[in-house]
Image (cartoon, rainbow, N blue to C red; front, side, top):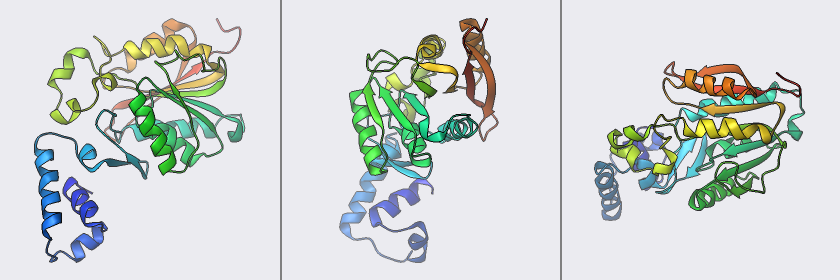
Length: 268
């Protein structure tokens, strides 16, 4: 649905089909005022997801409020890639342990838990607000997830060598680019956007620290920005702990997700 359809279907509590079948209906004063207010906020640049208080991701509904990063359609590629890696794993799916670093709204963790409910998933974020929304989204979609407030791997409650798979959609926009972003993007929390001077700060930290928490031959799956593939691959190679498994392109043929595999004992 486009944004106008989203607004009308939510306020009128009807389906897209009913919206057009009953196109001659007259709006009462209350609904007219609500719709006017929504479009007024939208014209100011406020994202429609914040205005409506929700969004859709992987066919699921997620609560979204200002201060929490809005899930992007491209991140569905990360979830789909993680599922393929899981399904090709030699481990029984029921025993897999997944760590989602920087979970935000919880879209990745909740989607994985919904599609593969027997996994043990831990979701972390540095933002208490994001974790509260993640908890609500887990409840909304009836999935079980462990939650930890943590700056990447800083929490002492994270278990060393305990995870089969680590996933993350880290901030990857360069600091200098933030001011030039569209108003809709700048409405979102800067901490979820700013990847440092070259956009790679979080990739360096995650690739450096994740081997201590990832089993041998476990996978690290990261979403990345446009043109960042080569730089991330160099960081992984320099670590001496990961090999590149594959790079997955999004629907616009942009390299969007990188899959890395941790070397086993005695590597190198």
